[in-house]
Length: 141
Image 1 (tube, rainbow, N blue to C red):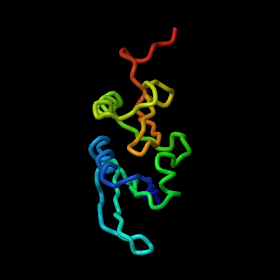
Image 2: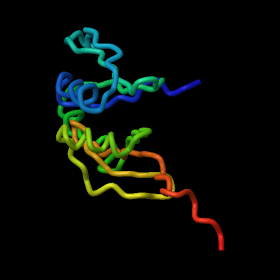
Image 3: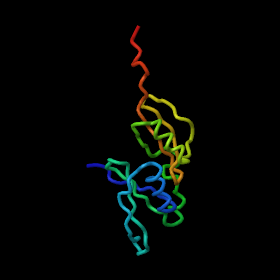
Image 4: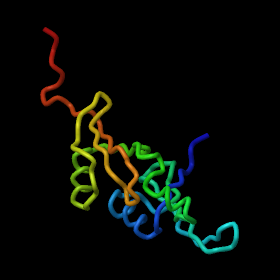
């Protein structure tokens, strides 16, 4: 068993694809025409990080209730966590692409972290490994 998809409500498909694929480096897994339950056209758009099993279903907001949730899917909390092997490179690439960060990178016991906002305004943690000490761990005295 595994978690296959998580829906992310967005204003429009193409800017969301541009952000997740062009800026974050996700893969576009599927972009197929579909229809709503009442027959209106929509798209089935799935993106995911390279090599990941779990993807994001980019769902265009349909109606006022869904439009109100764009950017607030987790009520303003960090609700998504993107782990990378090279934190500094990912942070620099994202900053150069204009990604909005909510603060400066910091080191926590679980690794390097900084909060960023996705194309819809949802809060994510960019997570990297704990930096190695330049000369290895300090030996006990």
